[in-house]
Amino acid sequence: MQILIYAMLDSSIELMLERMLLRIPGVTISVFNAIQKFYNFIAEHRIDPCVIITVVERSKDFYTLHSLFEHNEPDNLIIICDDTAEMISLAHELRPRYLAHFNDLDKVKAVVEKMMHLVGN
Image (tube, rainbow, N blue to C red):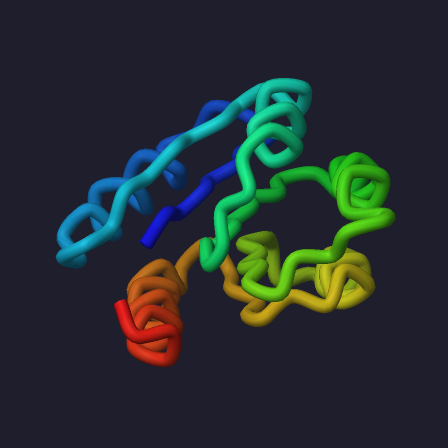
């Protein structure tokens, strides 16, 4: 299964997440730090099923995601963000499959494994 990771800022969270998810058999990962490259990849490649994981560290970055997914909301979106009320509220507007906090990366792996099982990979 293809996993796309988009992190607004270079961070250790993205690296820990990538290392952890690479331990899952059958997973390929593409990591993006630039919104334009991420958008172009999604527009050019019809990857279905895939999991899109976004690591959001600032509330203003949710507006970028809203514009990116304005016409095509992904079914398998996982958002990782701070557990403040503002961040959680903004994250829920995107209707993610799963919402995690920075200290819940092990749960993200379990969700990805379950998603893979549901699609038969």
